[in-house]
Amino acid sequence: MTDRKVALITGIGGQDGSFLAELLLAKGYEVHGLLRPRQLNDPSLIPDNISHIASDLRLHPGILETQTSIEHAIALVRPSECYHLAGPSFVDATVVEEPAILAALVGGTHMLLSAIKETVPDCRFFLAGSSEMFGSVSAAPQDENTPFNPRSIYGLAKLSAHQLAGYYRSFHNLYTATAFLYNHESTRRGLEFLPRKLARGVARIKSGLQAKLPLGNLDAERDWGYAPEYVEAMWLMLQQKEPDDFVIATGQMHTVRELVTWAFESVDLDYAECVEVDPRYVRPSESVALTGDITKISKALGWSPKTPLKEVIEELVANELSTITRGYLADNPNQKLKE
Ligand code: GDP
Image (cartoon, rainbow, N blue to C red; front, side):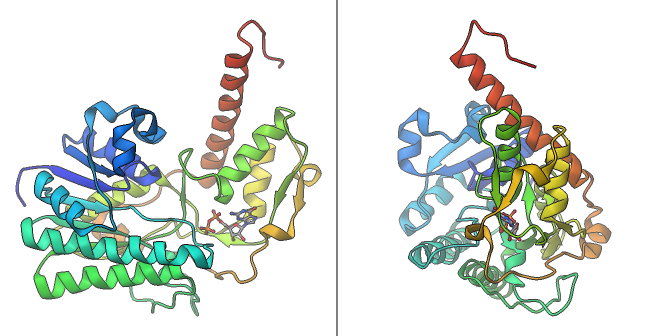
């Protein structure tokens, strides 16, 4: 591998992209990211997740649906490592969103790979795959040999992108690596995901801004990890001699009810008095037992998750509470906050 450390991150404004950008800057990389042109033309549209490091980043216009735009970005940046994280991340998509999901995940991956092949064939390519690629599983936990059986357009699109990466690895000799990423959380996660929705709801109830939190199935289970640790694994994956694919997970399942209990307990509230089950949030068909076997990544890369999920949830609640406090003080600069 060359000594030139130039990374290009698609999806740099998202949860994973922003943590990865911080990690790579700390490691001395020149870090480039793609943003939509309108975001670059208006400083107020730079995503919050990267506003604190924006002056250290090199941001370029890039549209993952437009071949020329991607070719231009690759030729300009000439990355030594490309991390493809962009694309919708919400599994529960409606039919109208499906073409956009396919275009971003399949078309976008193809555009990047073909541009890399033409211009910088030594560039190492990371693809953010998903546990949704395993879909309906017959065995748990899943590992790198588990058959794919996606049951969402999102999972299917991620699988196609992974197969494209495999094709470029086998037939064009590119260094491509896919991570099968299980759920991973942080204060930068979207509010549509359970952990952040829960944390915000708890903070708002504690602050007297709402009385009840509507949720779906409290017995649903997930393998939830901590996002800053997952981007370390992504980086490690591109530092290996040979490209390979890895499951990135915790290997631990937790129920929604456990998360709910921890979150409310952290502010001395009883969840039973605050949570109401709302059928709108109950999913008709759920993946059962999606949990990852991390034997391969632990052995090969020495990576393992560190932060217990309870701590992650407590961090999320504390962050939402401080956001509410900051907002209150900004609106009421002369008032003291009630204990
Ligand atoms: P996902 O795996 O991408 O759907 O990520 P989430 O972190 O949002 O996890 C969703 C899990 O929590 C599913 O098993 C849902 O059935 C369950 N769940 C229960 N109530 C809710 C809710 O109100 N919102 C969301 N997003 N999920 C919920």
